[in-house]
Length: 323
Ligand code: SF4
Image: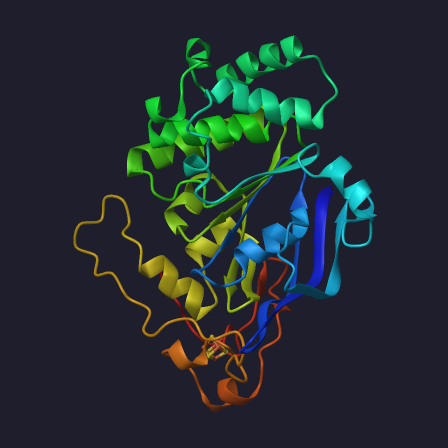
């Protein structure tokens, strides 16, 4: 059963240089208890999508179309007063670089207590009890509640932020690049923590990342975004074993496989396009080694492949993209 459904979402930014089409017709479903990952290079619209779900967009953002349905409610239509009952309490978020955003002059326990008492009408003593439980839940020693942020490693500070995001018992957790800036071992521990929290709490998680290795470790379902659009969507196994979009294929081939010593990694030539004037036709065509004339003229529709996922590529059934 879907807990969240995003349908045909379009979010543009008004800038001095023109309209930036950051999210341009994105649709997906998050099932209850699932980890769903949105993957793509920087600037592809991942963070704008998650900030729109939370309704924390900057003033220059304009929601052009679409709906975001959570528990039968279109989050884009309700007044801010109603949204405040959902944001943090039912849908919470761990922001990119959150671990560097803790107040350096306040102990971490007090910072979580502040978050709890801001959103929940409970006495401070009860909030401290809850923080102790949250610390245990995320694998931190409660004896360190009164320590300051500089006394924690990057991975521990990320756990503090995850504890803070869970402080109101949300149903959905959005984690935006939760492992950026951490070493590989700590990254793996944080991702394992997310997987454990899903199991223990029945959480539904949206993981936003550029890191395909992270996705492979924990996700059930994945959407690949490119230049504001979803170009491939499906379950993790199907996409990793049989990608149908050249961008997905090249992303997978650009990451080293564990245990493979001799594999030659590929690079994706060029960089993502400007979203003020994205390329006509397929937005990936200037970088795609398989592009044909049609790709420069006609935008490929997102088509259903035998109920195994969706792909937007004119040649999806002709290319044999072997992993
Ligand atoms: Fe490449 Fe054409 Fe497919 Fe776009 S539609 S990904 S340019 S082959």
